[in-house]
Amino acid sequence: MTPLNITERIIATGPVLEVAGDLDHAHAGALRQRVESLTLRPGQRLVIDLTGLTFCDSSGITAFLAARQQAVAAGADIVLSGVPVNTLRVLTMVGLDQVFTINPA
Image 1 (cartoon, rainbow, N blue to C red):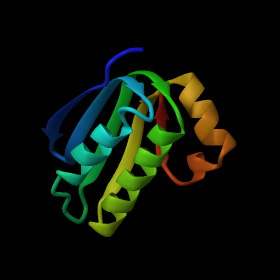
Image 2 (cartoon, helix red, strand yellow):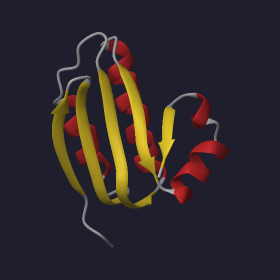
Image 3 (tube, rainbow, N blue to C red):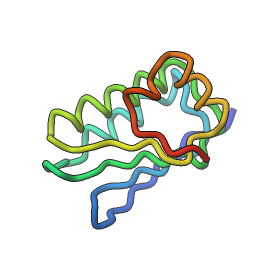
């Protein structure tokens, strides 16, 4: 099990959250809290960079959906970037590739 690490940086288009480690039931709440602490404005883009993601279960996917809901409510966009192949396969199987803008790894 790899500990979850979330770092934040701000770019011109909005916040970038870099997620590394295991995004599972024990750690998905940390991502949700981090997203909830963001102040998103209309027209911004929230990027969740998953380049360092080593594992993602259904709790992690639920955290992505909660992040999307918050972004949409704020009038912002959301992008999942650096999505690992295994996670991309799951997102595609459940149709979330039609909901999210996804940039694979």
